[in-house]
Amino acid sequence: MMDPLASKKLPLRTIGFWLILLILLAFSPAIVSLPIAVDVLIFGLLALSFNLMFGYVGLLSFGHAAYFGLGAYSAGLILKYLDIPLTVGWVVIPIGALIAALGALCIGAIVVRRTIAYFALGTLAFGQVLYYIILQLRDTTGGSDGLYGIPRPLIGGIFSDPIKLSSLQFFYVIFFVFIIAIVIMRIILNSPFGRSAVAVRENEERARFLGYNCYRIKLTMFTISGFFSGLAGTLYVVFNAYVGVDSVTWYLSGEIVFMSLLGGTGVFWGPLVGAFVYIMLKWWVSAYIYHWPLVVGALFAVIVLWFREGILGTTLYLWRRRFGT
Amino acid sequence: MNALLEVNNIDSFWGTAQVLWDISLEVEKGKVVALLGRNGAGKTTTLRNIIGLSKSIKGSIKFKGQDITRKPAHERAKMGMSYMPDNAGVLHNLTCLENLRLTQVGFKNVDLDLAFKYFPSLRDHLRKAGRSLSGGEQRMLGLARACLTQPELMLLDEPTSGLSPGFVKILSAMIKEIRSETSLLLVEENIPLALSLSDKAYILVEGKIVFDGPPDEARSVAEKYIIV
Image (cartoon, one colour):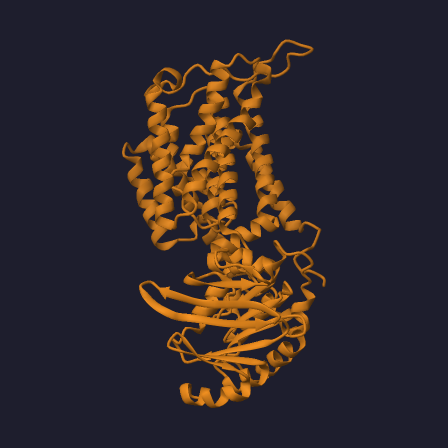
């Protein structure tokens, strides 16, 4: 049978969308500012990774900051304490992400068996455990002061002297990793495994009698999600040369949920849009209003009560209603 | 004896209420078995126990000679069982095609053409979301999906419930065609239809099997316990 959805050709609309997105992101330091552009990429990646669990498997993790923090602290500790040449310091990016994935695998093995509320509380509890461990290991992690003085990786060093990258050049490194991560996420979600995850989200019981091992699917997606969250953490450390204990708190976990819901969890790009809007709001509103979280909180209430599809989801819905595509 | 499925003395509960008492039944290779009873008699619970969605606290279930009592549902499905629940089991937010393609994960040689062989009208609804299909179309989709993996045993829970006579004819033709390769355990409200299709019948009354025998004899028992 000719499978109607198995078309090999990418539609022109998709190519156009990717081109516009790439251009916007690549020039975002000039459009907004460099710190905002970096935050959008890092926290956008974090929110997208969170949405792999929430949007595609239907499980709300309230401790996703733990994997961001695991990646960030792993990368920071390796760069600071292991005497590796800084020209190969870039290896902390995949290593930190893998350590976060391992953490997610261990925690996920326990929590993904639980149902919705217990899953959320379980992830929150493990996140807080990690927070207190980092706080207690003050001599190594810096405790509540955070981990300072992390050297940034350099480039070159074989045929020439190592070169220190500027912040803008670091942005493009982050941009490159971000794009690769997005492409991998898309491949995973469009694979048969991604389809089976959606089946689990839709109705776990039905997925089970269709032959799906739901536990394994949820655990695998949780680990993948932890990997990308950790990846975002390593990028954060590489850019800022610092990681604070607030990167493991429930507060950041809450912000991740907020960004995702703000943009829309039913659309792949929703969390990225949510991260962008949230970060812009944070920067702009906090410049004028001291109690800026009040404004953000009010917006959150409006989104949750009346625009449950989020900004992007609602926009797409209105677009389809207006233009029919 | 050539039993594909053997259910031996199972008891099952919904919460604290016992629903099944000492149920035993068999489905032989290439046979169609009807499981009849009033609403609440325990027919669906029996099927759920067989596919592994509900647990029995006593007794055993064997499939192809292997004890599957403690096996999870997905492993039973992989062994060659498929199940269509009474609500057809369609995933509402996925399209018709996506629902069919779900079977391609984990099963080899799934040919989507098979679905259209029995239910050609599904072709017209491939891009429609499951929730926007009518009751009959959802049932067709559920049945088509259950057939795609070419199972050795199909468990069908009220496949014709609330459907048009035309669809009932299609279903009967399909069952006649696949029975050489697939055995069926059929829970059906349409008792004359179920008896006309089956080789053997069981009648359940309040969680207990009160009859087990050929369809001809089942009719009089069914008249006694169930309104035919």
